[in-house]
Image (tube, rainbow, N blue to C red; front, top):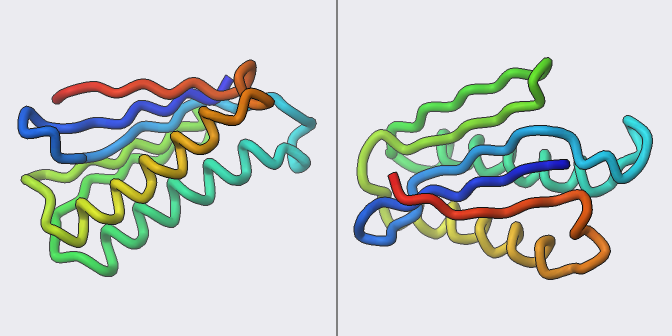
Length: 110
């Protein structure tokens, strides 16, 4: 199961996410769900670091299949858009019933 947690602050602003696990929908190297979510997560982290002035903490651990991305402060407008786009993509995957046994999405205030 691939678990995604989307974080927001007390104002409801997006401030990060964690991806952990493997979808297990297909053999390693052929799992399109795992590939898609990994690509979205890595691309969002890279975009936050490259396209915004926000300070971003990124923790990657390949052996644990972990990607944790957190803003250190309130999000700038650009960061909020990037994180909201990631949220939208995750919701699209969650809403596809074909992926129910392989993908879990939750939200958490931090």
